[in-house]
Amino acid sequence: MECLPGFREFYPEPLPHKDAWSCDARQHIFDAWRSTARRYGFREFDGPPLEPLELYTAKSGAEIVGQLFNFVDKGERAVSMRPEMTPTVSRMVASSERAYKKPIKWFSMPQLFRYEKQQKGRLREHFQLNCDIYGEADIAADAEIVALLVDTLRSLGLTEEDFVIRLSSRQAWQRFFASRGGDPAHEYEFYQVIDKVEREDPEVSAKKLQPLGISYDDVQSFIAAAEPTPELSELIRNLEARGLGGYLKVDYYVIRGLAYYTGVVFEAFDRKGEFRAIAGGGRYDQLVKLLSHGKVDLPALGFGMGDVVLLELLKSRGKLPKFTAGVDVLVMVEDESLRAASLGLVQALREAGRVVEYSLTPAKSDKQFKRALELGARFTAKIEAGPEGSMTVKVKNLASRAESVGDLAAALAATA
Ligand code: HAM
Image (cartoon, helix red, strand yellow):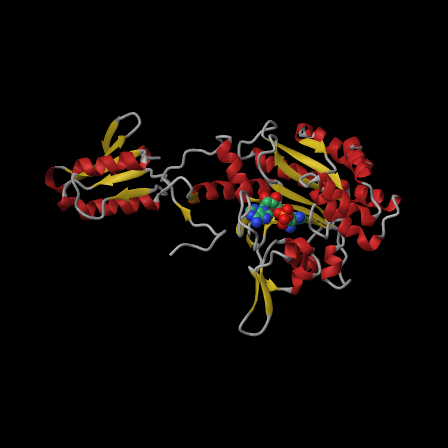
């Protein structure tokens, strides 16, 4: 029996076949996500994987609603697996914001579910780093979020040659639409056309724009001009001061599919344009108010970065380290009469924090040694019986082949 389409199984390395997903690589990404978010002063939170359906129907926009993994539960409740984290975290902030100093800076790494057509870079579940700031309207917060996005990718070894942050502005597009006499009731419809304009046949886009009273050529020349809004210019200056200017490009093809964005929006892409978006986000100043029925009004912004495209990119650019079992010491039991003493050694080494392996059942000495090499262990250690019941530990460094003999304390020092 196989797992469902669009879902993954994660294996420890070495992988059983070339298409298998690596649990080690996933952990490598999680570690980078968590440590970078912490460096920026973000605190970790989590929420429920199953939510009331209505959390998404009104607020996230048609695209995501069409992809919901929803059903009616045994209590007759309309529910959905979470397709994104933003509504959950906004609800959590709305209900608890008084307990926290502003700005609130939170991150999480949820598994999300979208009933999408399975394709390259798009599955029915993925893990997503979410970093969001609540309670700060200044563009300095937008710059901080973009810097965090850049540094998260840099912490995984990606450079200016590997990726670019495409910056855009919902307000710029809103002003464009309004100045051409666009009907505010159809604004989101317009954004959805813009969201697809880069990939879609120009004739199809032109046809969709026509009833909205907008000309395709007008849209294209606005994009080509790429004139930054005063806000975007300030954001760019802020990031240039940190030496991160080389990662940015003003690009109005980006507008974001989700309905709730209100200000600066952005997406991270690989430079060669081979893959889908690595990450996306922006400002959504009205969502907390909407979800709290007007009770709490907090500006908000953030981004989501998925693990699927990121892993494809890291693989293709050779940026993944070689993963091993991370074994420090393989304790060899060559003489079964010393097994009890060897178990004592295993325990003492583990208590001192070493990763320790040993053969659970009797095995030939050369087989045990071969296993140490296969596991990439740094050392072997074995108990040796001396005269009058005395015992010593022999430690061998597998890289230098140097050996030392001593008591337990010496073995701990030698395997540090
Ligand atoms: P999103 O653009 O829908 O934004 O998703 C963010 C990232 O998650 C994408 O760039 C992509 O890497 C990954 N992703 C999305 N869907 C899939 C999928 N089906 N399979 C694999 N990866 C996927 C959001 O979700 C916003 N809530 C982000 C945000 C946070 N905005 C503000 N705060």
